[in-house]
Image 1 (cartoon, rainbow, N blue to C red):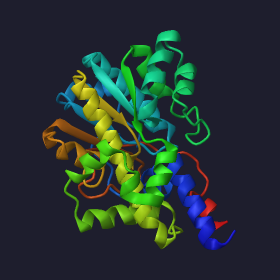
Image 2: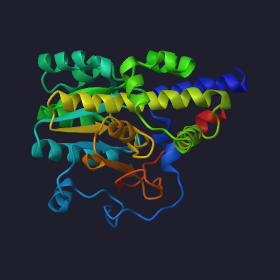
Image 3: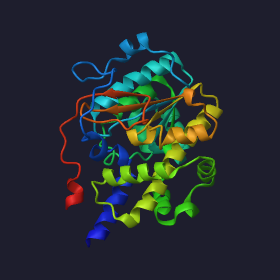
Image 4: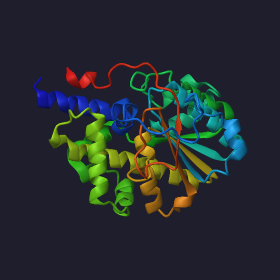
Length: 304
């Protein structure tokens, strides 16, 4: 395989497995930054109980980011989910890890296998290898054990591939309509393009970047639409579980929520980072931090 072909293959694999801009390659090894006020002296995330005592009520749309391979992020967000659901039982959780086409299968699995996380993620065609199961299990357990509704927010893999190759012609109609209502500047385009290239350790062939930006925007629009649909169906609060790249206010899901008429004040975008990670300007309403796990070089795959 030549260098360009290898780069295309790796790029598609990384995009389909997880959001490039929220991998350790782009978010876990950034330059040092001052820890958030929400971070304890040890660098660990504060407990939801302590945060709840001082925090004001959450807006109707809450977006919880993550570094996909950081188990402390998942445990902290699972605790946060339990608190949010206890506070408002009519909370719907939208998962990046599920396709929105699998909602019927997920609902049926929950009826037939109450509380059975394995049965539900199998019904959702959850990719255990790509998502490094069981890292996300605390999140799914928290939702299934409380009885909150779970929905998928992502696009099917085949659809993502088509968008990378074909652009607008491959976008689902509802997402294209939402995108066309969304203001999008050259600066936002450049930011997303750079994030994707950084997330691939600079190995992305330039010819692939326009299609990869299209696919990233389509996935962000899909998650926003899933949140909007859940709210329209009666949810009092909707929580998104996704990579940090998808919850950014400046280029990701909140952009599409606001284009659909959601006031900025009704959105709370929370990035989950590590002590040495720097948050993008205007990216999050607040940041939570936890120590980095031991991990291999995230760019190793791109050096082969």
